Length: 162
Image 1 (cartoon, rainbow, N blue to C red):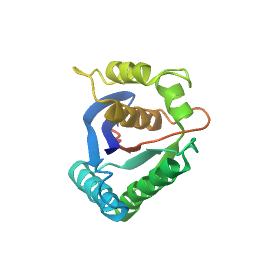
Image 2 (spheres, helix red, strand yellow):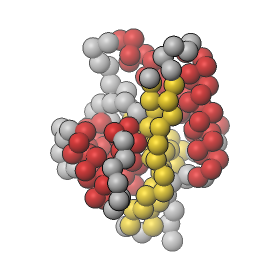
Image 3 (cartoon, rainbow, N blue to C red):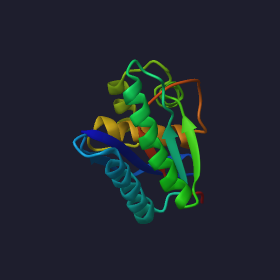
């Protein structure tokens, strides 16, 4: 299963509010073009439903498996295309920047990031890891971004000003 997490938050003044999060799941049994179309269509639907002002996406890092890195890059391309087709500005952040902005430690673990997302957005439950990572990317964008280099999912952010 290939998963693209998404997270949507509002920023009003200095206050962050949770709007929605979830995942777009594709099957590795399907060929690449239909999987990319599923991501593109899914993100287009989310953009249409929630009307975000910005899109924040985690940057790809080159990992040990070049095939995984290439597939991730193609999925990111579908996410970027969804943003561009909807005339939205795209900002990219590394995993290090996201962790630094959310946890204060660029080398924090996924569980630490998830806990801080719950606290910062005052969530009543625990979002899945992929959705939590997406929300963390949105929080990083809302905070103006901080940090250095790395990582893996696709994220949406809605920001409003009052």
